[in-house]
Image 1: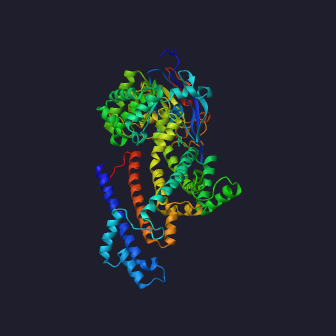
Image 2: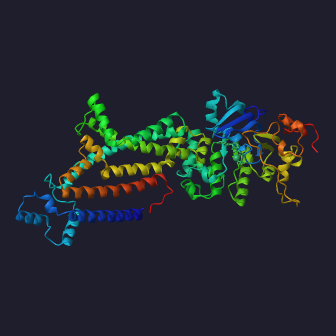
Length: 330
Length: 306
Ligand SMILES: Nc1ncnc2c1ncn2[C@@H]1O[C@H](COP(=O)(O)OP(=O)(O)OP(=O)(O)O)[C@@H](O)[C@H]1O
Ligand SMILES: [Mg+2]
């Protein structure tokens, strides 16, 4: 809290992550940069395979074996999580100050341990609580995520719970040490629609009550519009547009953002037809030169073959598109 | 739970009863016991007396009833070879085999589990390749040959270990190693592949994201999930050893266990002792299987005891 309020809580700078696979080097992050301010919710959207999960897993230190972080920096509260001196810091931060909720609640919990064990082990490890203290706190946490009969639930195994219930447990676990940042990677994709709404509502409510920052990865632009202060649009291992969520949705600048918004069905407007984006996402083993979206872009010109970076466009909006920067957004 | 124990006991008793019938039939079918047990030159009177002594002159169903009754009292009669109750011999030799099995397979587990885990952490890495190679090597070497190799090496060449018998604690080292190595080779491959599977599971990612120490994630979260296949193999190795496979090692090292005794009993046509040994082996198998089911349930609470 007493860190200087101007430094963002999390800052990812030019992150480069490569996966060394048999087929070649998959460039999953090709210079990703974004920031999350205190108490803010950042939405990350983008097609499947654009590198959303890889970017946040790098923050959690979860990039393993064929993958390597090969460039850039990740600063949490102004301190690097990547430099060798920061190892101790990472160990203190991961799971305690930064917590993560995964996509599939059916497989994210360990099937052979009780819910109680899985929640209390976090508390005991990070906060040094005794068994009893941890159990009491775990019951409070289950209450916080609207699970009733917490005493009974603590003794249950994951297989005895529904998907929605398990995701609530995951959220409770993430909240255990009162983190400052929660990363939710498609937390509702695996759940059915009514449960999705409940879980998102719960997340939004907790975010406001606990004043925690959130990174929410989702494919649902509607959810972003509802819950997120800011939104980052990813394409082929890069962020192509980032800014205030309302503004980005009201006046998207990057052609890919426009395409995404056009491809989203809306209930409040009678659309002529849903428009999908032509073409296929690029291969990250040999991504196109310059703007990776240019092969699919109807405004592409020669400039687009030159590499470009995120450029400020006023109002805290950043875009990486030659057309947009030159002003002829059409 | 009570239902489970009840069902298992009934099931086990059926198995043991089946084995009893087979033992009874086989020992009476395969030649005439009197022929086998008495010297060739014995007279007809001697044979008749012997038949009477064993009760072989009575109808077969009476004999079977009596056989069952005796078994219920663990009384198989006197060993023809050692002239003392067969069960006494079993109770004397079986613990030696149990000891050998425990040390041998215990050693295998103690080595295979850490080794398999380390190999699984980096599949294709140095440790992994050495482990896989060593394990294939271990699997292709016959056990008796391994035993002889140890004797030549440690007893003859370096003279640091005794060759045979069970006189001192040092006597168990070579037989236990010989028994454990093939088990180790099989087990390490299984631990490795199960752990590779588990380490790729999502819950492992979750555990790391929770900030739990590496040792806890790998050695507790992942290992417990890999526990079922590992326990299955360990259980099978124990059963195999107690049910007679220990005979190879026991013969090479003259280890006074049940396997060696079984071989000797067969050589001496000691039907009484053979019956006692086969029966005991069946009981061991049944008991271990029941114990295994409990252990499975302990490892994986999702399993229902039925
Ligand atoms: N362990 C891995 N080994 C090899 N390649 C990987 C690995 N993890 C991710 N990748 C590659 O990195 C790229 C980005 O993957 P990522 O999971 O971040 O996509 P995503 O944006 O989260 O997609 P989705 O919306 O489907 O979750 C993909 O091309 C993927 O193939
Ligand atoms: Mg993803």
